[in-house]
View 1 (cartoon, rainbow, N blue to C red):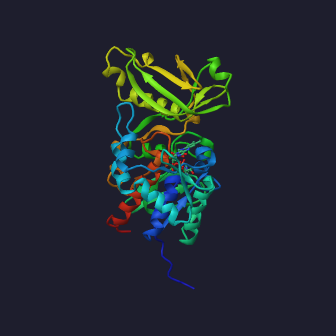
View 2 (cartoon, rainbow, N blue to C red):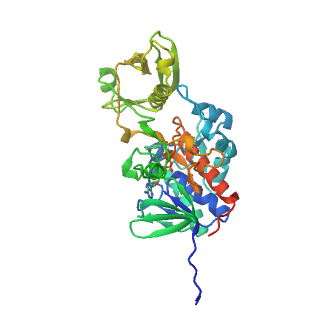
View 3 (cartoon, rainbow, N blue to C red):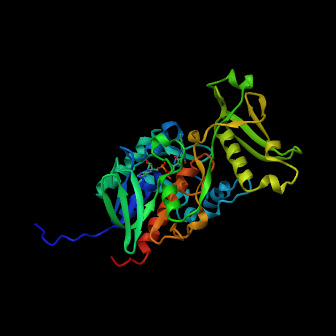
Length: 371
Ligand SMILES: Cc1cc2nc3c(=O)[nH]c(=O)nc-3n(C[C@H](O)[C@H](O)[C@H](O)COP(=O)(O)OP(=O)(O)OC[C@H]3O[C@@H](n4cnc5c(N)ncnc54)[C@H](O)[C@@H]3O)c2cc1C
């Protein structure tokens, strides 16, 4: 029996066991960085299990440069995550899952899925790796606060506190709160002096009572299209993809991507740049089944139903080379908690994986603090 037990910190506490947290723990295990995952929910990866209707479109098999280009929307560029994506391009993610024994399937447009069509296969692959690497995982453990010390952080949960040299906040966005992502990471960041960009629904359906839509509720159209025009009829955005008719209106990849584009357009002041045009003057046109529907004065569905949250911890307060806070040394962010988002098609999971990897690689190479 050991008699001189010493109180020492864990090298890395990962707050949140979703896409970014799981990937971070996997990289930490590979690099022999002692870490612990603290997860609010009873199981890991609740949101990952829901992705792509339970099939998990985990990345898009395109070049990193094409991927980075696709992140841009409505005048905003995807620069913040560019270095992370170049280091973990989609090809590496695909190889990584293959090396964990996951058979994968590629769609003609490059979207990648586990071959068995089950998101659980992805979550189990992480679970097996973390079990084999003996990574400690604490579920049912919502983190309630982070307190920086001169030699690390006190990480508080309802039932215990933990001493960690570094903390990675990977608590996700604010949509689908039942899956555990409720905005805690953004609140911790705000309390520690970071700016938080207001939340908006990123990929979301729109309401319309157009009978051509409502009478087709429940039908999906693979060969749909969504376009956005300005007040002078100039085409600003055009995307060919799935359109779904719902009881409330329209959804599906084409509609989601058009709504995301418009939200970024608003945010980046697109309306002001085209002086006379207000966003209200932007016109959405959605095509499916030989119908062309103009959605007038659309009401977007609520944020809690969004596939991704726009807004979150400001990327101006985080170093894109390391994912470390510019305000609190040793504090890192990854995934949707940050003000980053992508279109549909595997982009958001890829962003979570790539930013998580970048954070852990920087922690691995950072000079260790005296404890
Ligand atoms: C219905 C749906 C379908 C989607 N489909 C796709 C898709 O096919 N492809 C794609 O690329 N993206 C998809 N997305 C988006 C993608 O799932 C997210 O962008 C991604 O999961 C974000 O990863 P994350 O780790 O940042 O957050 P999350 O995966 O949400 O993980 C955050 C974790 O942190 C935990 N947590 C939160 N607060 C605390 C706390 N205080 N203490 C401890 N733990 C905490 C949460 O419980 C959660 O497990 C989809 C999203 C939804 C909602």
